[in-house]
Amino acid sequence: MTAVAPESTPDSTPDSVPARAVRGGADGRRSWGVARSVLRVHRAALVVWTLAVIGLSGWLVWLTEAAAATERAAMEACDRAGQDWCDTTMGWTGYSPPVEWIGLLTGYLFLAVAAFAGSALIGRELESGTARLAWTQGVSPTRWLAAKLAVPALVVTVGATALVLVYRWAWAANQDLMYNDWKAGSAFLSRGPTTVAYALCALAVGTLIALLLRRTLPALAVSLAATGLLGYLVAQFRSSFWPALTVTSTTQDVDRPDNAWELGNGAVIHGRRDPNFDIWQCDGTVAEGRRCLDDLGFSGTYVTYHPESHFWPLQLVESGVVLAVAAAATTAAFLLVRRRTA
Image (cartoon, rainbow, N blue to C red; front, side):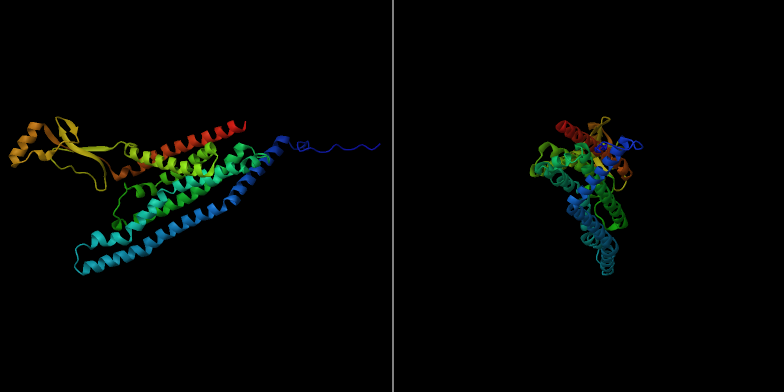
């Protein structure tokens, strides 16, 4: 009677190859397969994001290399004609506004990232049931979520970093044509790591909201609202992320650096700062005004401000705060997936 070899099972492996190694390789292939499926399913969004980055970068290059030269030529012609308003309005009409608009688009693209993460990336797959189908094909829920987050996070980081670098170059190239300085919202966000931090945070928050709601349109609306509220709240506390400087003077005028971000000013009354003191309540002659101020306890004025050198400390602290929110949202998303699929 001929012996029949036992049929191989999926778990049977040659003695020379550990079963754990085989399973690890299979898991690696599955993870790569999930990553490829993410790129394939969302290739339209990837194309749109890439075109947006290329388009905004190209627009900045054109403004910096071509439009700025045209503006300066127009200003010089205006100067030769004897006009006295050329350097205050001429250069601000064709260069600064579009650069500011690009800065706004760059700095607030995280809202679009939140919408994509909340609706198309996670919410749609949970609502349609394709997520559970993937979980039954040998891909664990946590690996599925990791791939769903890692691939767009990489794409968003590369694209946002490229936009920030191009915007920094364009913004610094023609400062004399810009009417907004470093503390303006668009210029502040678009010239540092906060743009990347907000985009990653929006991805994480949008994913968490989609896992909670499991519906596409509600996840879209709530993700947009949540990330917009986060950006608004952080902006309200931005000035307190780094210690401000305060200078005082014994006169009514306080010298502070150019382009400083002024946070407050007022008078020093009996050695204390009073932002509501009305220095013009003492009128009359100079001597009378001086006696009035002395009687009220006036000893000088003060100004509290951030100099331009505080740009990077403020940027780094804000980025850390936003990334902490992103880390918390990501952790909550993984815990939620594990709990629901346990």
